[in-house]
Amino acid sequence: MLREYAVEPELAATWSQRMEARYFRDQFGLGSPRILVPDEVEGDLTLWAVERGSTIPRRAEAMADTLRDMLRLATTIVLVDPYFAPDNRLFVRVLSACLDECRPPGRASGRHPSVHVITSGGRDQDPAREHFEAACSEELPARFPKDQRVTIRRVVRRPGGERLHDRYVLTENGGVSFPAGLDESRDGSGTVDLHLLTRERYRQRWQQYSGDSPAFDHPEDDITVVGRKPRPSRELVEPNRYASRRAPLGSAGL
Image (tube, rainbow, N blue to C red; front, side, top):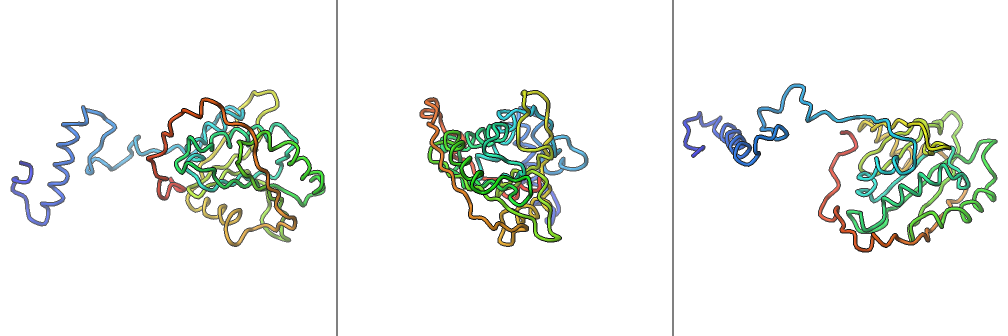
């Protein structure tokens, strides 16, 4: 037995645990290089390397697919793009594709998430409130999943305050930035970079856009859109592969 080896008492527990870890790895790991024991977790290990960025096709489906797990595990989703326009199909297609990934059959909670879109409303080139709200009502419900509620908020920069420029997709578990924008390319070509936010930067941006002390003013009332797009028939029988999973703790800073 592993515990019968003569070892100094103060080292017995640690040594025994390591030996047992090696035993189970050798017996049941089938020689897999992806299974490590505690004393092998040191140095520059490829298995522990986390990609902090990626370059993907600038198409709605590809952008949403890259975010799938983050979106399905989230209960609150905040999309930030100062140039979002409800009557611009390039933005709407990306938002619609992201919401399709949030449909309850594929979600850990089994319920619709709380979704918020934050965009600019204080620049000279921004459309008037009446035009913007009318476009939201006319263009968006048919593109959003049935019963999915989306809150759209137009914010303005405070004097000397933070500038609304970068684009983000944030959740309570972490977030990514899309420096080039949350719209797809006009002809379906090209690529877009996305970057996983560090824990510190994520906390800063989450507080600015979703916290108790936001960095921007919003003089207008929020606009709420309720989706009415029917659920695809395949989702009626698709199993919920996330039903037994829990959101990873502290995933924002991986």
